[in-house]
Length: 207
Image (cartoon, rainbow, N blue to C red):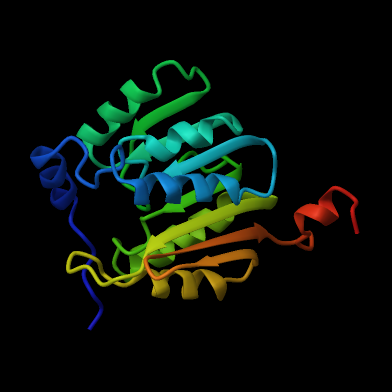
């Protein structure tokens, strides 16, 4: 049986109980994971980035330092309000309410960075297929996809983080260039191919 996706009401209820339901602001685990996510970006600077599922904007704040433009979206109105407040001093960052993957930036929007952080286990199978297809289609040639997901089982998740990363690794049009694995989470970096994927050293002519 295909597992059901997590309903939007779940997120509204989480934010109704707490302004920061996953303790992004206070947990060292989350702070360290966000720092690792940004540290794994293979480019020094990105022209246009997209972060679906931005929550309260803690990772968004770090990504903003590496991007000329950044669109961050979330399904929960409370999360969008919080993220907008946190990013209010960042004129190049736009925070919107959007129910991905059914809603998506304009069809002609192209990004050189997409960050899927703690998102892929919420949609049902059809929703995940749509999410990954739209992600790949939105990436410019050579663009970067960073995926980060919690590994232990969660009742409200349609699948585990390992399943999400296994699916991403099998997609046409993506080449994995970095892999970080811990007991708690997986972090993978992919490049949109063609052109052929190059390492950070190769991109700087070191080999």
